[in-house]
Image 1 (cartoon, rainbow over the protein chains, first blue to last red):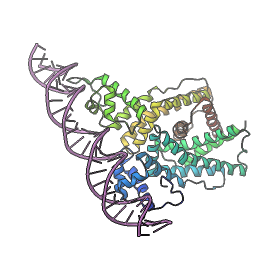
Image 2: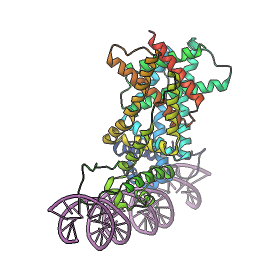
Image 3: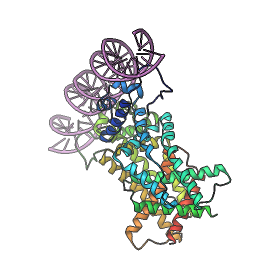
Image 4: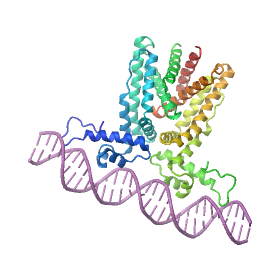
Length: 209
Length: 209
DNA sequence: CAAGTTACGCTACGAACCGTATCGGAAACG
DNA sequence: CGTTTCCGATACGGTTCGTAGCGTAACTTG
């Protein structure tokens, strides 16, 4: 995921995809080792076996660099079909938690989110690269559940509908992130089951009015 | 909150409490203006009208400085009695969101949490200064609801009981934090009401089995 | 009051990092 | 081929870090 997409095909020597990958890997490794605040561009470049100038040609500063390194981690999130709504939610909760619990991810994600509180551009990047990607999982899971008859069809009011999806998304992602990064407790199958039961019952009860 | 507590009374000139307060204020203000990554110790010192060396005598680096400035922000969180469980939860959700939405707090909190992923000492500070303080609010709200008959008494198994409290805490705090800092959407009364309805119905349904 | 102790503001300093510029050479295009 | 673009290396001024030394201010003890 190089920063300026090489549109169709340009003249001259193309950017080294090996350098791209080496920089991303080195960034994530360095983030694990030393954290955001002590991560230096020069160190990343050396670790990647790349000149510092090569790095600056792709990302204009530390923030840009780390955002792209982190966003690519979320590419792997998918929603397997586990048979039922309860199982689907538990699956995605566990997959998300597993991603967060990997040493590189939590430090990286938190660092980027923290930085975004003062950088609107960064915040937009996060929305596009992470939030929207995850929100699609919620929509996908709901469609399946509706096909199975586990959930009622979309509400008449599309706005009302969108608000509900947003709420579910914040509750699921928020709880997993909070337990993992703030409470620093593990998200194991038992917790996932307990949590899923709670919100599905809440959904069912709230919908039946 | 000076770093080394001046035990009983020491000889020599005491630390200036005015300097303490000025540094804390300047740190929070600077955090609002420029964020964590661009905050410099020299800038804070100048803003506080204090020599840089005076600052380094109290906190050994930027991290220590910011942690103490942030932790003190959470002293104000209390649980007002709003009449019912639903109202109590909505109150605390709105109060917590209000705290997070104040310009200084979200940036500071995220910065500290991010930094804590690589600093066990910091993580322990956060647990004590923030997590435990908030978890007490959950316990307090439940006691009130039990007195009103809105919730069943404590479960027979104390461990089971603690797990439920932890779950509720992560769900509430996580959802509010996630909506505020990741989704970057406002926590208004309507959202608070919708959210509270969801989890209370979930709790009721889950308890009735 | 005098002596001792500690904090203060100020200045200066080496080290590290940032982000930019410049250069010769290498790799892909037409 | 020649052109274009990227690469690695080196150098640079500017900023911040964290420490050290100094003379002075404030407070405690005898």
